[in-house]
Length: 348
Image 1 (cartoon, rainbow, N blue to C red):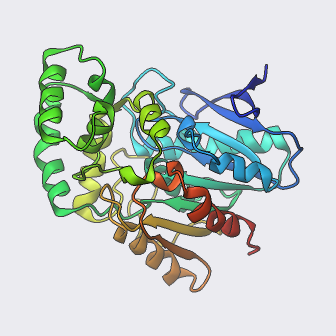
Image 2: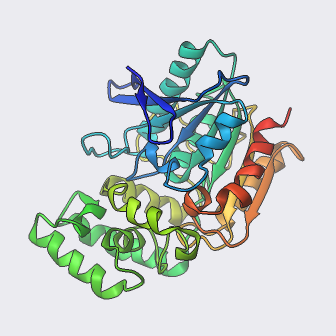
């Protein structure tokens, strides 16, 4: 049954099964009018869920897409905090989750093609699918923050190198919800450390997110870009992330490009080197102030795609924005979403 959201929109949850049997779902969001354009799939990052695109701001990207006539679908893939935590990798999502999500959208809508808006580790894993030729139905991709070439601040790279092996001795997961409730001695000790080292605000989940995902104060957004409601709301929107992910991103940062960690014949061994097996037009977005993944991450991937098809793709650097405030910012509807809509409406 459709569920009516506080904004008056309706959610209809469509379960789908990933290629390896993992249960995922899509949220089909509908408004007052029937869509006049095709489906757009929104793909979240690590340790969050599809709801991350619907912060309590005046106008979300979902609102803008619906008003512009698009058919909006939100994907909860295996990294979503909607599901029981699991030891996922980007490889699994690329091979099993995103291709199945795209097929499900096409089956549900009867559309001939799909567009996608992808963020952070939803972006890295979805781009792996695209470059491997696993989602040929996707004709336009808007990628935010990072895709094939993760670049982090030097201090963040050192932190990954030192912290991941040490933390793996104590826990297979890290969880921002430890800022609300710390169930183990290790969680209590880490929470105390986060509180001492991150004093940028009173929201411990916000401080945890900054600790886990980089070296900023904060890391994933600029506080001045968030309204108070969003800063409170995010307390329930960040939870567990497995060390399998941090290990993979650590290896990838060291190599300067995404590294597959499982031997899967569906994936090329060298992402960002061999020619991409996709015809999709890609618009890359990067917050100028991003301290989770530096803007150079997107610039490198843009140059890779541009070298293979000059003048076809696009790159947008967003002044004053960081990582997730690109979507959650109180003024993103003015500063960011018009650019995204323009890219989605471009004809190839």
